[in-house]
Image 1 (cartoon, rainbow, N blue to C red):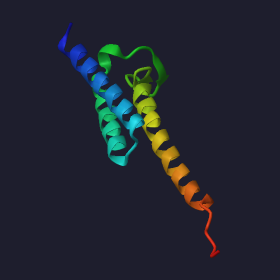
Image 2: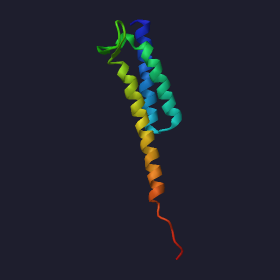
Image 3: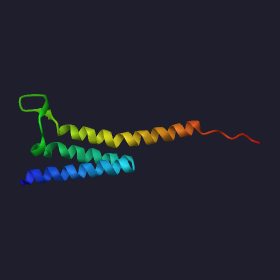
Image 4: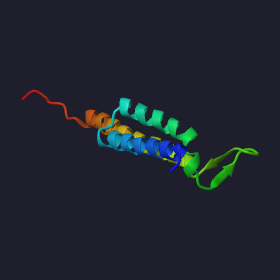
Length: 100
C-alpha cells in the first residue's frame, strides 16, 4: 500500500466518523468538523477517485469520490436542520395556559 492511499483511507475514515458523530448528536460545531474533513478529502482522494462524472477542463473534473464530500455535508446538515425545525415548530404549537 502506498502512502497516498493510506492517507486517503485515513481521511475517509475520519470523514465517516465525523458524519456519524454529527448525525448522532447534531450541532453546528460537529457540522463544521464535517465540512473541514470533507474539504480535506478533496485533495487526498486521488488514489480512489473513480470515474470522471463531469469534465470541467482538460485536466479538471468532478469524480465519483468528490461527491462523497457533498454527501457528507448534506448528511451532517439534515439532522441539524430537522432538529431546529422541530424545535421551532414545537414553540409555535405549544399551547398557552389561560387562568382557571
